[in-house]
Length: 183
Image (cartoon, rainbow, N blue to C red; front, side):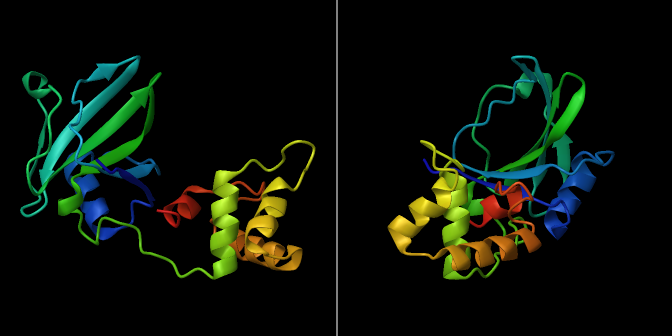
């Protein structure tokens, strides 16, 4: 059972419409698309987290709140998504849209971005390895050079391009938009 997670902006047309129909007062910036065939646990509270769920039909866009008696874990029917709002310690942590793989619409996923081979290497090694290891303060770059042959100049140029495209932060850590490019 394969699962994919994408970080969204909330500006994707279908995502914006799902939010408008399920949690219209939500003003946050955290939107996650979780693609999985696994059953969803619809219980409202788990380990100090309060969760609210709506289900929405992808064809008609009709939505309804998941009632207490319907909260047992279960798989989503065809063409139905579940939108979950998570609240931890009175702070809304974001919305997660749960969808089955065969029901994913292109309008739900972030637009893929063209990356050069060097940019792909920098993203992959930034996501996979710690910045320093065993006294080597440039471990990612060293490991990438050892495995792929990328030079320091090419690494630095690709990293700066990724920073300008908001995929890597000023602290050289991969950002959510950068993570999307790895899936």
